[in-house]
Image 1 (tube, one colour):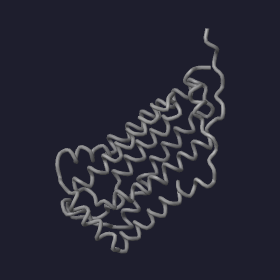
Image 2: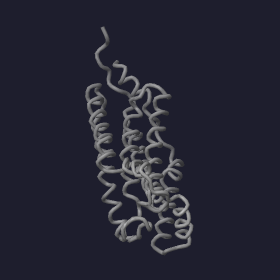
Image 3: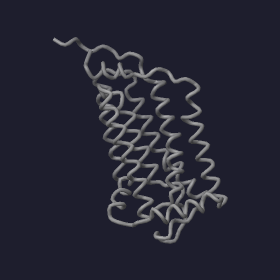
Image 4: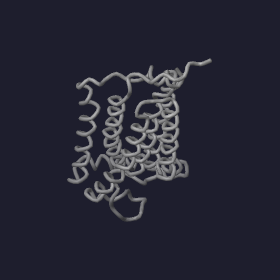
Length: 229
């Protein structure tokens, strides 16, 4: 059996217990609904949000560079390269339904604007004082793009990594990128903190759904390749 296929099989996850669905999907969905309600109703949470923004707001070049990591032109190509890599590896190593994880991650990325844009129209939230007058800042599209692109790439790559250390490093890099984008957006003044927090909750639901789908559809055993000479 090829080493890569063996590593993929050894990392193939077990089925998910129903009890895990509540913290994975229910809690972030509830928090997203609560934050969205506060934004639409101009609730008291927005006063805290505005005070926190004033504390964190320090527009500088570094924060702008961090926020740029959430641009479609930066984050989506990272996911696209990962999709191509996983597709080639899966097909070459004879992974059953190798195209399914790739298609699922690509569909999830396509869902981001389909969900975020109507939400921006619905909430119609003005931006922080340093941006031009306008509305449509909740939830943060840059945060959602970064979270789904980098998070989706991470979920696709994890089964192909041979060691626990490599998987931990990949997760740490993904987390650092998403947090960096989030911090840059708030510090630069492109978004309120709640705009970013709302995107976190929304993307937690999306990425958890992808993770559950990948676990459910992961083959329990990879087909054997030619024995090494």
